[in-house]
Figure (cartoon, rainbow, N blue to C red):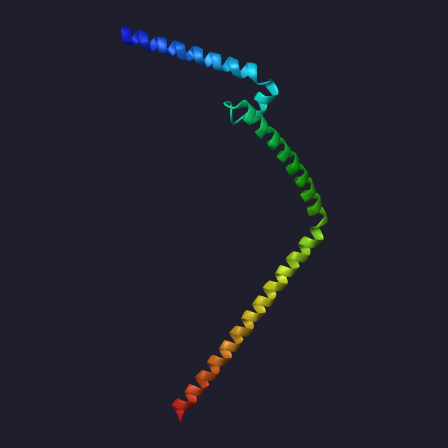
Length: 121
């Protein structure tokens, strides 16, 4: 029976510790910090600094996103030009490949003709 009582005592002390810990979190950190803290509940100071950095980064990202959206709207013509350039490059590559294939075919035909002539003679 002593072991069971000891386990119960441990459970009770654990619950009390949890309650005290929650009370500390609520007391030390302001509610705004608690709302911002999703990652670290251990180091309030470090978390506040990280949250400030994250907020600044988020603001910068928002500005960048706005700029990117504006750039996309303004650069629609540039995108078309880039696509046209890609198409032209693809066409040039295809033409080069076709020319190479034609040259190879011509060479093969010439070789075959030479062999046929040699064999016939």
